[in-house]
Image 1 (cartoon, one colour):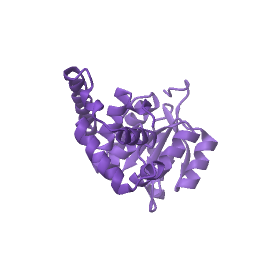
Image 2 (cartoon, rainbow, N blue to C red; image 1 turned 135 degrees about the vertical axis):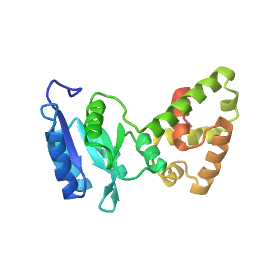
Image 3 (cartoon, rainbow, N blue to C red; image 1 turned 120 degrees about the vertical axis):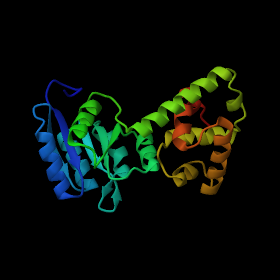
Length: 229
């Protein structure tokens, strides 16, 4: 059931391939009355219009929209229609998974996944759960476990104390502009992209994190996002 009501889960499909849209629509409508397709779109503009018109519970969003990235559409979908967004992708690139999580996606399914798995993912995401592949889930759990262990071994937060004022500003910017290109963060702080990358390398070393996703999770857990410049 939809997390919002007792009716079917309302699904919006955004994919630039008509045959994929047709197949997904047939698949989801075969699961009635648990879920139903309320709209389809083949590009970003039509996707936003359909999301505003239909107010879906879940948006199944393709990453490749005819040369445009579905990740660029993700923030607007989350802000304007309040739906859960489940990414549909043909890639297994870990960088793509990282960006999707940073930008607020509730999960990812691969185009090669079994039909039953896609339907299950839609249901779980509609109920507020996160749906990720095993590799990504394992990495997130490992990151959280490692952070918790470090916290026990270093209750005084000595590592955080070594951050400079500018490095703290960059951590705040990474959280506030999650998933944004480095240039956006650099422009916000009136720095060059190269300077930001150098500072990030120093921050990663000091906090023992390995990526912007790790830093985002670390900062949220430790409250570093509240240390404004």
